[in-house]
Image (cartoon, rainbow, N blue to C red):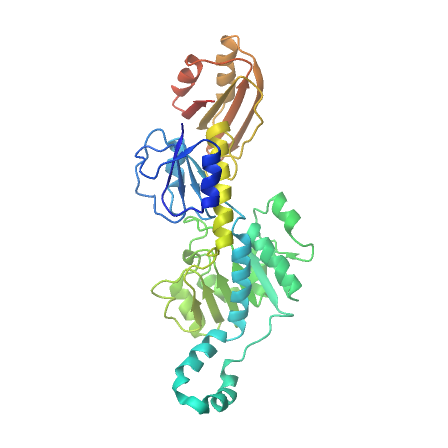
Length: 388
């Protein structure tokens, strides 16, 4: 029986799905077949040879060594969209806090809490210090139009905002979710030039999105722009941000990933990573992570993987061969030649690449035994072979 280990507290709704499938949960297991994780840092972990997959109950996977996992034949899943509603609501809250100085006003009222009967008059006199613009009629730029970004864009339209969206990797599914009223920006400079508010919803990738919001980007933005970053702290260069705030280029910065700089900088609202911190979000993430893990362990199907292609196929034969391998020529021909030489018929198959890696599922009309998978596994371009 497969065993799954959890590294964080996972909603019982997700654990129930695992146990109902007949798979065991053993948090003391030294060599689990799968791991369910939320925020625990796994980058320095050594993985046992039989670890098949890691499922992150959330969208970001910075806490998992994704590339190393692929080379060890370990599928890494995330749960895109499961926390989209929670993050969307917090972004709308951040939009309002970026406009109206609600936080500053609250802090000021608390500072005069010892004034007793004078407070009402002081409030009426001092409230003008905390005024801010309405968001209706203003222009919002959404950078990244995945499950979260699309929800935010559509909601902002309902609030009366003009919305630009930018995403060079916009998927067909995301495009269907997006309102036709969202203006399509073909480059990010269009966002910078036109938008009063900018919200970031892209992953942190060291080689491409690290400090994407920097001195050069700020120079292209409108004066008094308000920026919301509930994605990752590293998307924004802190030093350049401070300069932009000091020059009033940036009127306010709201972040869900505070650090030593942004926690104390002026005109910054630092929140303690609240984006997905709702019971509903945690439940949905746990359910999706559990479902994906169970389907992969029992059927070899991959959905929402960050290091391997999404490949799913209904069972159609007596045996199923699942192969994680490099995306190089003739791999598929080699697999089929081995099966054909054993006079075994292929009932159905599917193959898909993702970057340097690929995944193949082959269903056969009769059991394949051990010789074929053992031969396939000897190839230096094959990371893992399973027979189900």
